[in-house]
Length: 254
Image 1 (cartoon, one colour):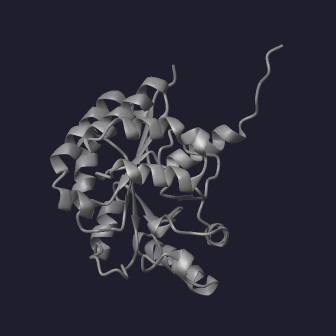
Image 2 (cartoon, helix red, strand yellow):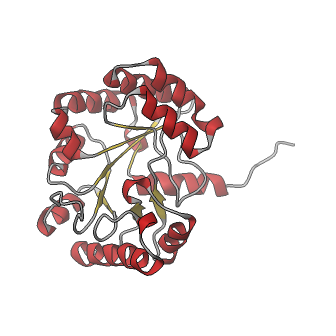
C-alpha cells in the first residue's frame, strides 16, 4: 500500500498568511504561498519583510505582479505580470522562485507558454477534485479548496475543467457530503486509504472571514497524524517528484 502525500498552497499573500504558516509549522507540515507584489483588487498584501520571514520556512511562489487575470490582458501585459512578479520576488528573497499560480485560475495556452519562457519549473491551477499531481507540470491540479462551496460549484467546476475520469471519485465525495468540513475530512481520508495525493488550497483572508482557524488547526493535526514526514511536500517538491516518476523507465520482468 502506497503512503498518502499532502501538500498545501495558499494564494494572494494576505497578511493572514502568517497565521496559516504558524499552524502549518505547529504541525510540521510544509506548504507553498503564492504571493503577488500588489493586488489590483485592493486587498492588502504582506510587506516585503514578512514575505522574507515566510520564505525562511516555506516555499514562496509567484502570483503575478498585480494579481491580474492573465486571460483578460494582452500578451505583453501578461508577460510583464509573469516575469516582473518573479523578478521582484527573487530580488526580495535572494533565491530562485520556481513556482507560479494563475490568478483566479484564469489562463490560456498562451499564458502557459509565457510561464515556461519566464523559467518557472511548474505552475498550479484551480482545477479541483484530483488525487494526483497530474502529468502537466505547468497545469498542476488540486484536490479541494478550503471554503464552504455548495454542491453546484463542484458540478460546474467538474463539467468545465475536463479530466473527468481522474476527477469523478472526487466529485462523488464532494457531492456526498453537504457539510464542508465533513467533505474535507472525507476527501483526505480517501487519499489516505488509497495512497493518493491530497492538495489543499485556499485563501487566508477567507479563513479569517469564516473564523475557520480552529477547524484548520484540527485538520492539520489530523493530517500530521496520517501522513509521514517525508510525504509532506511543498508544491515544488510535489511537481519534481511527479515529473521524476513520469520520466522513470518502466522495468519489465523477465
